[in-house]
Image (tube, rainbow, N blue to C red):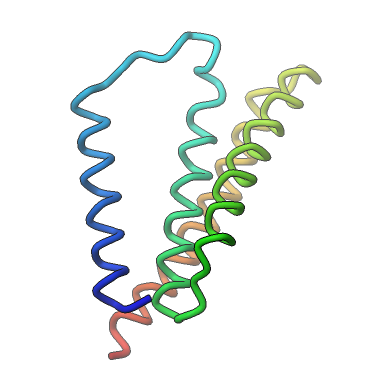
Length: 116
């Protein structure tokens, strides 16, 4: 993927997020504990995909599988925490780990963009 393709993908992501915020549908209340970790997992996958694109190792199959499995795993961990009675702690742990991954990938993207 070229740098222009990565920029186009990032622009499409930003447009999608803005459109979603403007539409602002209200999900069912039972989804409330799961949405933050699902969004964090999705952002992690998107930033990881951008990093892979800039490093020229991007694979659309790997991206889709990683995106879906990361979101499913994050939600499953929070559901497990809810079942064990520690939902808030598990949710916090998942968000912290995903946040670290996002910042790690973002710094790699920044280094890649500033290198050339």
